[in-house]
Image (cartoon, rainbow, N blue to C red; front, side, top):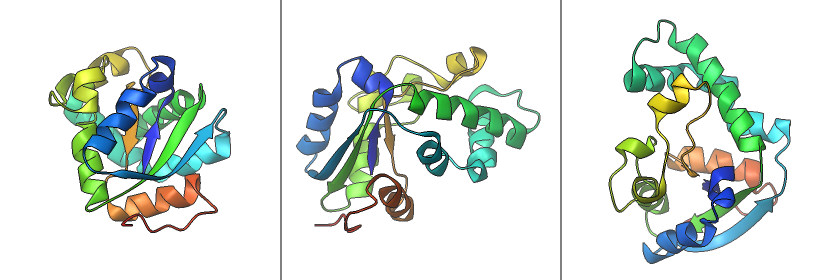
Length: 168
């Protein structure tokens, strides 16, 4: 499951991003445009239970995080504001090893450290360090599910009325 975040739409990168997934052999099985993402949907995407994981990622990226869970809660607030600030596009992609292929095409979470040839590495302009210093979410264009289980959970959020199989 892929989310094109508000900065991808603001920067008019939707076509380029989708093209990269298709060129990697993935198919678009469904696509949804959300003009406005309500708070309930954002909280389901970024639940409080993610706080520790996000805090640990920030600690690894920038250091100086004394309480990872408390910092993670702050990051969750930033992520929720970021995702709800403008339109997003949800993509249900299919193909062999769709989750792994999508993650490889997307690139590392921090655009400043993502490999060239990936969406974030080629098109990303932000960094976790800079965004943390500025008290906001890292604008990294895309969310890509990290596992099959995560993809299934997220598909149930963004595609509530669809068949959850994504290996077609």
